[in-house]
Image (cartoon, rainbow, N blue to C red):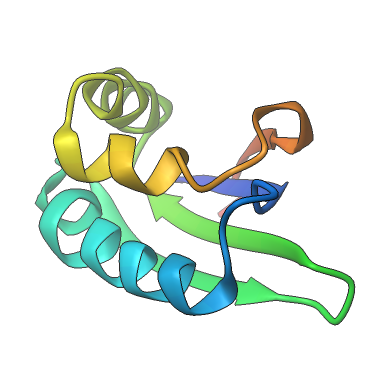
Length: 97
């Protein structure tokens, strides 16, 4: 079954929106869309500094495999270095149809 992943976070104190937007674009093209099972990924942010990345995966196994791959991928590490680690929340939901 397909899985909807919702990741929310705030930027690290030393990061700014422009740098994050560039890192996110690179994360999307150079890492995320290279992962098996990725169907769609989009990023948003609110007026309070919270960011949200919504990703649609073919399966839970594909989502967890990408999470594991991100731990050693340079482009993913550059992205996550801009994030306040204490602010990260990741939730995964199995689609009903």
